[in-house]
Length: 214
Image (cartoon, rainbow, N blue to C red; front, side):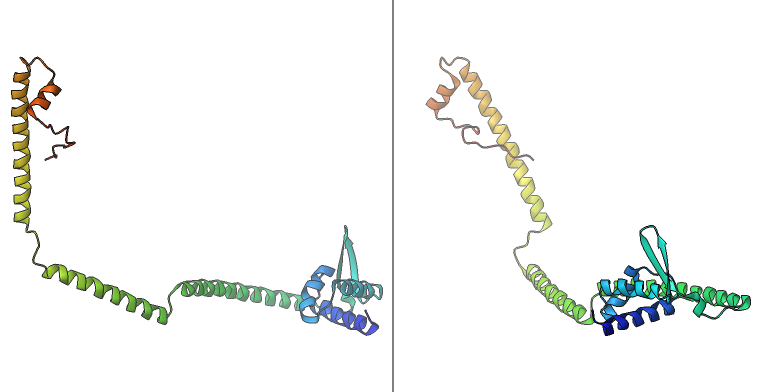
């Protein structure tokens, strides 16, 4: 790095630390100044070490980490009353900050809900699609209402009653036939199957027919 760039980095960092007036590591300074001023990590470390050597900033070592902060002797002394005023201002600003943060959270929540909501254009499009769908269903309903082949409840009941009657008749005739066949088979010298074949009888089972439930 050139000498002019070194001095530029030193001036930027010194101004930053004096303005912040609180402890910083080299990583803190690099992270906070890199984007705005384009300072590299090596340049920041070198500049802060040089400033500490020149006693323009103070350096403290905590374990393996070095912390840098502004030289407090350059700042004017503050009386007890001024400190109390500063504490009162800090308390007031802290209260204002809490209120502002709460308002921000509320606004963020409202913004989140609004982002989930539909825009006017989207709502108009949705309404148009629903009206179109509703019109199709109304047309189908009208066709059904105007049809002449509806089954009335009376006719439906009549059909079910006739079905029940036919099924009962089926059961009755099947039982009568089986009773007659069983009586004949008592004196028949051959098997039931041979008898059915000779007579030409086809049972429900032969035709895979099942009597419906009623």
